[in-house]
Each structure stands twice: as C-alpha cells, then as structure tokens.
Image 1: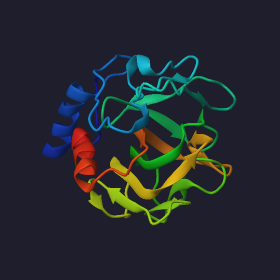
Image 2: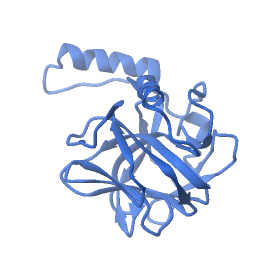
Image 3: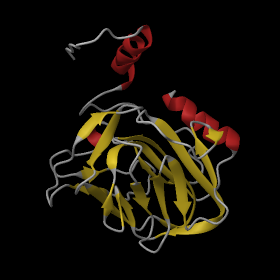
Image 4: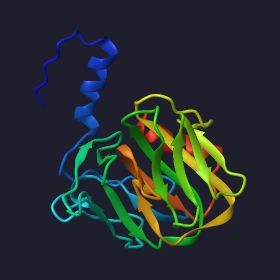
Length: 220
C-alpha cells in the first residue's frame, strides 16, 4: 500500500492510514463479527471471500442464505474498496446497484456504514420493497421513508445529520414491521447512490440504544 501525497498529512491522518493495516483487507477473509446476532435476518460484511468480484455475488452471513447480486452497467464485476470494517462495496452513482430480493416481512432495524461521495446531492441508499420503504440522505439529513415513527441514529447517537463525506454508521429502528420483500442496495426509484457501503445488517427486532452504540463501536 504505497502512497504519495502533494500535502503533509496530519498526525490524525497518519494514524488512520496505520489503522487500515489492522482492519482493511481486499479479497481476504476476515473473521465474521457476530455482535448483536439476536434477530439478525441479513448481514453483508462485503469482506474478502464474502463477495465474488467477478460474478458480483454477495454472501449473507446471517445464516439465512439471502444472496445479493451486484451489477454495474449490466455487468456483474463488483467494485470493492477499503471499508470501515474490513472491505466495503462501492457504488458509482450512475448504474451500480445490488439486487437482494425478499429478506423478511418483519424488519425493524436496518444498520450499515456509509461513506457518500458527496453530501450535497440526494443519496438513495436502500430500497426495502419498491413501495415506499427506503433510506435516503437528502440535503445532509438521513431520511427513513415508510418506517412508522422511526428512530434514526448516526454514529451511535440519536441524530439524522450527515453532511460530510466521512464514514458514518447509520441505524434506523421502528416498533412496527417493515416488509423488506424486494430489497435493492444503491438505488431507489431509478436514482442511484454514489458512495460506499459496509457491514449492512437487518434485524426482525428494534435494537436498543445500547446495542446501536455497540455496533457503532465495532468500526470506531
């Protein structure tokens, strides 16, 4: 991982580069993290052998065998990038998306790490059913459409603000079942997501604030 810059990195940036050596692996399997496994109905870590970059097939680590398929410009070659926890999947904002399909009719929590390419345009991250249930970032605000009285967390605290291009952990919980019958990643109603996605999880229960905090701490 040789890098040269036309600027002097700060001490904090040097520390983050060092940290990549402990957490980021491309096409290399890393130990699966089973934290907060109760009620887990889908987990995509996008790490190493859990995504086939040639075929675009993504392995579900929840035990439910819900395979995803990544496509860009009608091809299956997946674009990976160093993530917040291991390896992440990159979306180009133009044509890249991942078809997941039917996950569960009783989803109550959606959690993931996201790093948007730009925070000033609408970013459509996850469509749960094609019928109005989705998660977007609009004008720097995380929006959970089709969720009944959702609680939104950003980086472990109740907040919906996300107005930069750094990695952030986003969690949406609700007490009412959401029918995740036709899940797609990276596109909602024909509008594509530009950025990276890591450690996607869905649960059939609403995680507590303490559990959300623990998930965030996995990557912090």
